[in-house]
Length: 475
Image (spheres, rainbow, N blue to C red):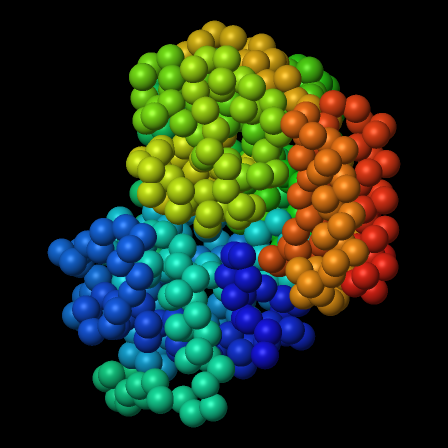
């Protein structure tokens, strides 16, 4: 049976693949697991980070509670109700925060002393999708081992989880009054303030709607909002961090200093400089890292990034005496390496940036405000700051394929990859990987000659499509 959990929780088409019945079971299993961890009656992965045994993880009724947040998707009400019912059925209370960015749930999980957090969101995925992901009591996404244990309980033939009655049944509590503390936290990241900075904000009709504008205005910025309604029927549709073109044009039209575009759950951010040029996660990582190195605030003068990050990031940091550590794709791997090495800054080209000390997960608003704060403090425009990164051409081609599992066993694909790798030598690299959230295989080729690497990527995509019975959908 296929795994429920992918690279970022459980995802699928809401009410078709991700049904309320399934989400109810996921809620039961996840809540029982997190409550057991909080009470010390169960084991969890203690190799990842210290477990805070002194943390308060019970609510006013003296029993474990979880915080719950969601993005604006229309299916959010349905699945939030289902996961809440599942949690309450095992005797765990739910503090419902309503619509809130994913990093806000992580932040409030720690601040409020919850046994864990739950997010109902499919992040940057299309409108019809939705998902469920969990945070532990320290605000970190669960380890693969923890997810496997929850999954085993969901898929078990016999449900052996608790079913309390009467006063033992969990309750849903309104937690929206706590949202102000996350807003205050974000505002505080602006340091001396953002007065005089004109910022275009694309909220992608998602969880950042309203919140991003309020926070930046409180910090002193002049804000031009876009797609700033909590409209789940348009979340991520030709807008936000995956489609920054409209934001870029608006920055030029308004004569703004910068633009910030978030995805549906606001754990990612992509920027625009004053000329309307996209500034991606690699460039933002370089800007933040170089600033931190100048102030001696970057441990090991090291940034953690994935194999998808552009080689230009490595070159920019190397020129300043820094370095980049590479991990497999996924913020989980980035975070693990950061925790293992004691590093503070890491992220992905997609704009998923983790700044430990601010939050325990990627925070689009937090990273965006930090970027603006560097601009204000340095007095330099974003185009100048981003020019430190001289990016090598990258070509990304997607192959839609339902049989992604054949990728690892195909000798023809392996031979084609090795042929591209030998042709590139030390001046580029190739990556072929299945998406953890979609029926897609992603092919990335990087090198100095764009025309040549585009040909390589298309040829390799053709081999993958033929072997997996798929089709090349874009590049």
